[in-house]
Length: 307
Image (cartoon, rainbow, N blue to C red; front, side):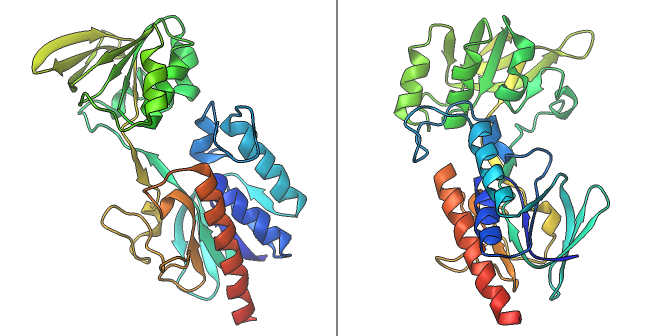
């Protein structure tokens, strides 16, 4: 089967694109990635998505989007795209499950992935005390002392979430000032078991005899400090998920997809980009959803030109 529109990614941009594409009567498939919902599925509290007066979580929002897309006939597939042949008229997407998906047009809505600190033993400690997702892994450290590394909204939100699970949450940031919204900083400061450690740099992840994280060696205001924690949740930003594209599409110096001004059209005919993968400045669900809708409408217009 050759689909009209294939969408890569299942965050708000991807789901919105699927809703608009399928509702337009186009054969639509979404390749969801490792989990439905993308990064926003990790968000416990959404307060500013239009239409919801009460707090909702990311899983609820994306599940409702998925149901809506499926109600219009969009097909959903699990798995990740590992390579893409998108220069030809018929685009081919190769998944990690060995499937080849063909489509006349492609919408890339792969978003971003967490940025690592780059410490020597960081990768080896993933699952042994190092995590990039508090809502995914916080439960395993119930009643224990943990650290969150970062100073943006994600770090503050993760700290607030962990404060309901862990005994103590140490918020480690390299500056005294925070990039996060003041409301999140204020909430964290008002939370009794969140302790701020600033300005601080992590010099070493110290492990126990079993190879699990035992403590952090910090430089706090230029003085060494050993902080005993069972886990460190790294929240220092994200990187665009564009590695699978190779060099066939134009990216900026940071790896984000370049599109035409005010459009989602990329440098490759029939290929569009939506959401955080093309717009690193405002990482908001509502902006990503609007971008996905626009990408779908542009893709539908493109299909009419090749019929």
